Length: 381
Image (cartoon, rainbow, N blue to C red; front, side, top):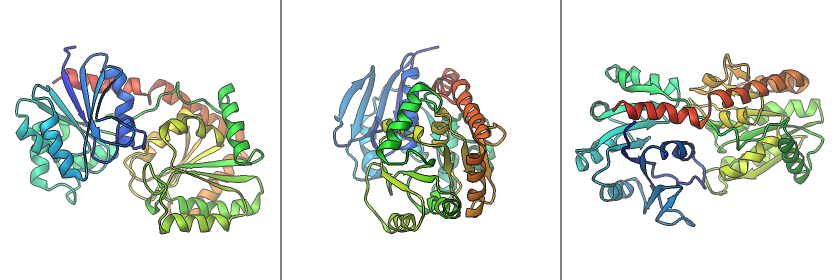
């Protein structure tokens, strides 16, 4: 494999390392150790309190740019990326291919698409076609995202490839391991839920993520049995804990439930490694067409059975894998009531689902495999 000078261009939303969270940022962090063994890598992201504008981390150069908005970030990229860069690998911002392509005519381009960024409401057809023509390949995080691109632009099908994300199994203890049990007991003691069955939600607190549907589903279950608690990890937005009307509504709903509801607020990714061990079940009640929420990989790595919705790409890593349950009637809280109660009442089935999920991460849904698939793409350019 030939060593290339590679620029990884993150979005203007969040920094790297992903101290404020973000699926794109965690994806980049996950693949860096493997790609850096072979290629010369510079990562471009935004400035953030506590992070220097320039530094090396494990032989990877990090350049962080001032950013009040997307346009300012893009303009800084135009003057900061090395003119001798062989490949500029852009995450989630397809339109930047053309603007940066004018500044770096001798560089090759590629895309990693994590959302429906080719939707005509986000990207004009003419620009999308030119982007597809300019790039060497387009990687997506799910078949759902890949199909959304190909459906609009079938001429780009040969360049589109699904590369599922992953998690590092070494960073997540399973519920049945000694470390997992220690984490579980500690976190439960801290929140006074030692004797409860715990349902875990991890994600932003907004309507499209569906935490209110999960709460409505738990209401009759908490009334029926007195051993169920809900553990809510997340906030309105990454890296902050400002309340809005929806988060206030969730807090009001929680006060009306007969079982404990714990809100942790935002937690940085590194703190989540142990938080997953608090739970008996992981629930992802997404109401929107989720590209494929990375929390599924984290729950699997922790050995948790999953309850998710058939929205977007979520079912792609659950349906047929014996690691959880997919809800088709996703707006119906009674579906969550039924399936949560089923798993809590069938611990042997829940355990086997958790084991299946953990094996999937060990064998396939991990950063080593993700990186190998990206490296194979790089090797072909």
